[in-house]
Length: 372
Image (cartoon, rainbow, N blue to C red; front, side):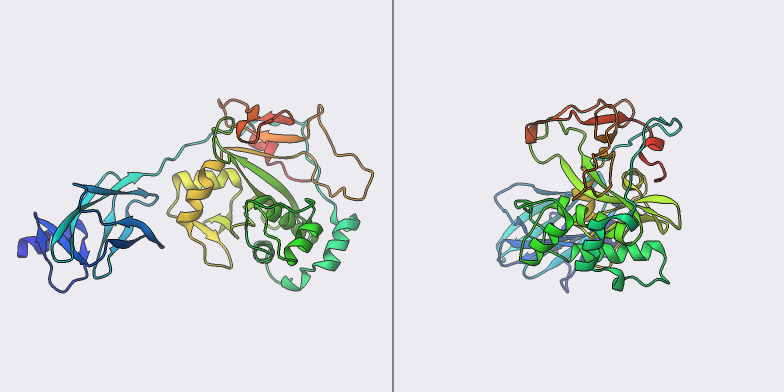
């Protein structure tokens, strides 16, 4: 018994039952039904896994974003918990209805990460992006009158605190739905239709958030994220978010209105490239700043693949109701940041569309130039 107790300690196993039991030299927990739940980090997963005595070595694979991941496995009668390390397996048995022993294996697997590199030295001076001068824009004035946000903002707050409040306000306007679109893609229409019960995709959050940040005095832009396999992926290869230039620290920051998050590292807001790098190399210290409770694990699993190709318009002025033409450079409307040695994507099969509107660059100094 002393030997068993030592093994349990060394493997990090904890069984909730009062008397520890073993079967084939592995821990045992009890169950009266095949239904289970399990917890990884802060997330509970219900209905994802059933006890299957007919499977000889039933294996549940756990992606390790952290190494180790805190893990709990729970039946209707018992539970077992331990730290799951990447590349390690953990065996136990579920004693079902006091009759059948189901061999269960938890296996830690790696989370696929990729180091993405860009040019950090060169700058193409012929490339420039136009941003909104909100003091002169009639559309933004109308938006501010109809959907005011100034009452949210404490003028004693720093810029990051102000941005997080506007982010939270935007996120609360409607529930996400990827299957519906507003009748027009401008902030007032989106907010009017959301107020009437509409639910919209990621791009709608990004558009509204950008405009309300502009009304608060910030330079902001919609940013389109695309996967490495954007040309051929059979599911949606893109996501839409916002970037805002934070005046008091003079840098761009990524904010996602759909998920109500601003990624930070050591209390410094990150742009999209820095965010991808932190997820790859510094996951433990990365934080998702939000006024709501947000799962870092769930958001990482969603967003990571999308942080490969990034593009944004060459003109972020609000031109609704004006006769001003959108800026183009060499007849292109968009600047795309491409990792060094990666191909320039030319199509998106999922949407049956061509990418023929982009100027391509590998340079962070082009994509993250200070706004004027």
